[in-house]
Image (tube, rainbow, N blue to C red; front, side, top):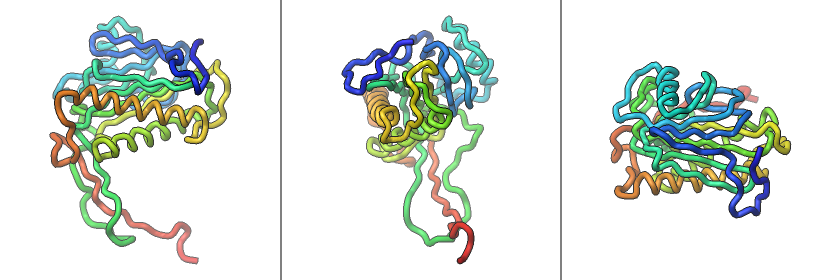
Length: 260
């Protein structure tokens, strides 16, 4: 397997072989260990992950069959466990960023923002209602910020899923700075590592993998936003968007373990 592991390499070898056909992007690296929060989520070991652009107003379908048909039509072989992230954003707006042992690929649309107001209200105050609309069955996918992160390092069992948190944090920070919300109603993250690479026990923000991942996700998401909104301005609030939710309820907060 190939891939630079030098943090000072200005143009490292890509972690993934990326091919786009028929609005499907295949990110290939044989034998990759994956953790995904999208379709066919969880842990697996397979040769590729996929990003798919779905049509506008795409509704309820048999997702496994749909992904398989789209990949077959594009000439890509895929197994039932291959991670697949779906979006309404065209693959021509996908962007990739590389630094040291890490690469991130992102698509970014924010027509369905998910806002989370912070502050206000007293501890224990729990207004009725959950704020906003939407549900687990809402599959507009008109926006969606999808991120795939890969590293040439072999990550320890806890370090690979932790990279999901690192990528999501970097995605949220970038979106907050650029459009004022931490994400959309349908975001997903997939992370992969090379089991034959140099071992890394941790992937937190202070580690070579985690630090590079934060930079790559930030730069890939920012570039993907610029590409998607080259000819228009993205919505900067739920009110300005076609879809979206605001989680403005208040949870009950108590001391852990009760009173002393």
